[in-house]
Length: 421
Image (cartoon, rainbow, N blue to C red; front, side, top):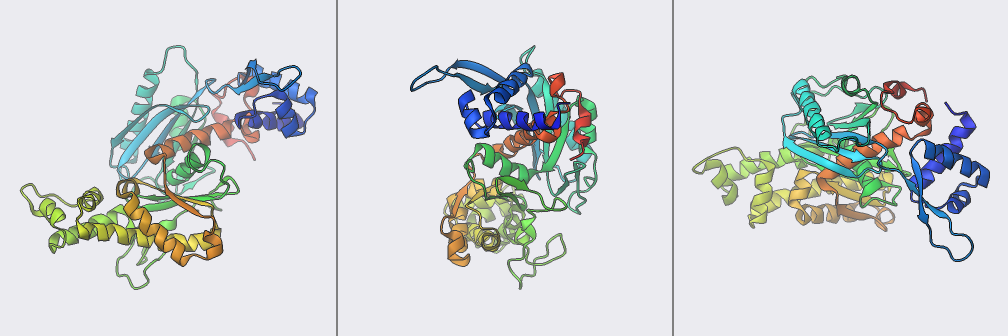
């Protein structure tokens, strides 16, 4: 393992090259390190296969420096996002670019063993499609529903996630694939994906809000993901937005935004609109020739067909989310709020307009003066991209890099996830 001071400068140089600083003189200028030290660290990173020197860079005079490039093909990572009703998997390079991906429906909340076995099978299929002799597997990143104990990679027990509480996800995949594994809440990873490779690039304070079967948030503060003291930061779905509501949330309270504005809430209210006839579109689905229960997608589709009752339900959902966000904006003062998830993606501008109206109306003018609220451009890819960056950032961090760089690869170094801070 490199000495402490050497490791500090090694990570500094690597981070600058990863951020796009492309010449040695610019690395020297940005880092404040001496030319000799920078040269030594670049040589070391070159031997490890992490940085390469390419063509001559443009110059306005004097000797042209060679361009530095982060070798994103040195390894690859497997990533997965487990939503309430779907499994998404992918393979990414070290720059967070998805090289291959797959998504399918699944009953995730009540089937941990079956779900994770399916994830492993899909991982194997992705790896089988990789070119022969390609880059090695360096790590695995997985996003799951609900809060996660970051230190252990185990989900926190929730009544809605039967069997998932304290499940050894990290150990299961580390043993099977012999690489380091990290696990986090899926919405945290969506926020990280947008920060690093989406609309959030360049922002230091942003919120990502997922409006899907449930509601959750990922918080970026000072350019870093904020997980909280016990991993439960971002459980915004349990902010109460209607004190007089009789709708009970699974957490035991009434009036939570998740119980009133999520996809599950839209399905419940859509059923009522079909039953009382206020929504002709939904009534046809519920009581037509081939009747079936109403889901959130039906409500979104009805609104798109100018069904006024369905449009009102989506608008009301957006208003509840806006009320929740107004409080967070006052307390947290983000520069950007991104709205994602299946409901938001389907309802689009209709729900976005309702959210914006309430936030700008209720939050303090100083907090909203430069605030942008937009739909997530990465959509269903945000969580996978974020999972890739979670793994790569950890592998190349000061905490972990020194434990494997002399070997040239973190493959087989499952022990590094247990490194002391």
